[in-house]
Each structure stands twice: as C-alpha cells, then as structure tokens.
Amino acid sequence: MSDEFDPSQTLPFASVILKLLQGPLYDDDPRNWALLKDHAVPLNTWFAQMGLKLVWVKEDGLAYLTQPDEEGTELPRLVKRSPLGYDATVLAVVLRDALEEFDLSSADSRDLFLTARDIQTRLSPYTGGRWDETRAWKQFERSLNHMVRLGFLRGTPTQDQGDLSRKVFQVMRILKIKLGPAALEELKEKILAYQGKEGSASAASGT
Image (cartoon, rainbow, N blue to C red; front, top):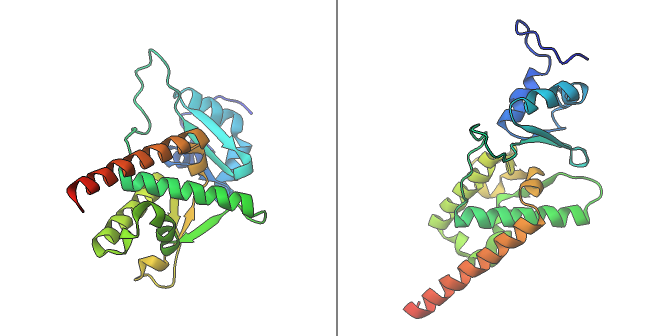
C-alpha cells in the first residue's frame, strides 16, 4: 500500500484518525478496529509526521496515542497535563485496583462493569464512609463524571435512569496503561501521607 496521500480524497482511515485524536480506540468498535489493522503502516506514518506515536495493546483490545517529550520541539501538547484533585485521585486508584483484581480472578472476560454503589463501597476505606452524606455524594458524582471525561470510565444504559447508585459503568482498560504499577504505588503513598496530615490536623483541633 502506498504512503502517498491524495489531498483531494478523504483518507480511507480518516475515521480512525479522528477517533484516536479523541481518545483510545477499542476493539468493540469493529469497523474502526478493522480499518486500524488494515491501514497500520500509513497510520503510523501519518501520526509520526505529527510528532505522535500510535501504540497498540492487542491483548487488551485497545490502541492509543502518545506524544513523546522531545527536546527542541515547539509542538503543543495534544492533551494538556493537569493534576487530579484528591477525590478524583482516590477514585482512579480504586478503579485501577478493581481492574487488577478482576484480571487476576476472571479468565472469561476482560470487561469490568461496576455500579456506582459498588464503586462507592470500594471507596469507603479511603473516605471513612463519608460518601453517605448528601453533599459528599454530589462530589462523588462529579468525580465519576471526571473519570468518564478522562476515558477511565464509560457509562452504560441502565433501566433506572433516576438512581445514580444503580448506574453501571465499564472500567476502561486504558486506566492500566495510564496508571502503571509504579505510578499506582506512588499515588497510594501520597494518599496515605495526605490522610496522615488530615488525621493529625483533626486530632489537633479536637474533632
């Protein structure tokens, strides 16, 4: 297949490019996954010319883009790096742990689904049960939505649209890539340190 592109014609793999620029591409999108496989060489070339690298994790059925840090380049970042708040960080760690447990215990599927109530229960050791408070539940909802925007969670249709606690989310496998073992342990240490400071402050104030 030629790597020459005709500017008068839409690229046959244009939909794959657009998908990957928006976030990871999974094999549950069969049309674009097939296009990705059929046009792997020109896709790699196209992204390389933009300073991007196309990464496939075939065993997890996903592909995504990275942007290597190169000295001397003035290219803008494809995705701006911004730190997560404490609640979102804890949630990301909990979801990452859940995915790891699932992978160790399940040989039949690689897709993990959790209800919002399941996730809330997993958060309890970090939050002391405070998610049961109405105001805290709102923060939990915001954190869930944040994970959806980052591509770490995907909402699924549920029968009871009015009850968030029963809403089912798929934990997306890109989370294992973005939060590898070393980064996961580092975050856990930071969370423990933060909790230690919070506990000391509460004790000092007599609460």
